[in-house]
Amino acid sequence: KTMLVDALLHADNGDDDAAEPPRATDTRADEQARELSIKATPVSIVAADSRGKSYCVNLCDCPGHVAFSDEATAAMRIADGAVLVVDALEGLVAEGERLLRAALREHLPLVLVISKLDRLVLELKLPPEDCYRKLCHTLDDVNSAICRALRDERGLAPDDAETQRWLLAPAKGNGCFSAAFHGWCFSLESFA
Image (cartoon, rainbow, N blue to C red; front, side):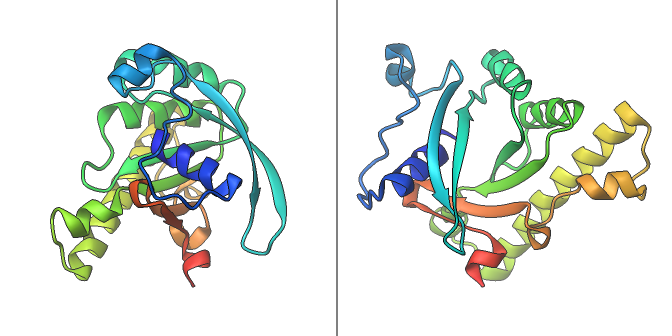
């Protein structure tokens, strides 16, 4: 998550330097020493969409570690939306599902970023079709977690129209793919 925010900050500043990201939102000495976000850190960027229109975006980089989950939960109370970052290799972990449930409780619109796609190719050396299957499996896991959360908290069935509205799909424009370490991110629309 922090590397994704750093990549967005670099893009906002027009910085094409491919050096290791500075972890700009890890401002505390203990965060820098541990290379782990402990406190939520807000930043603002001016981002342009694929049509060239600019928007001011206020981001809050929140820790993902379970020991600091109160920071993310508190940040959701003031947010207009949530970006759920899921590792392409690990998939949706328990803490990610807990934060997903918190975002749904706050009725926050969701965007899914499946991150670290580079690891599927460079580390696992998966062929394209296997990468596609892995991404579909990750997306299915996230949508299953959404269905469980909506069933548990609102009594909604998976085929209910309200449940369908919350499901994530890159084709709906609420999902994208990234490799923040290498500095790229794309949606289906931007890729096309």
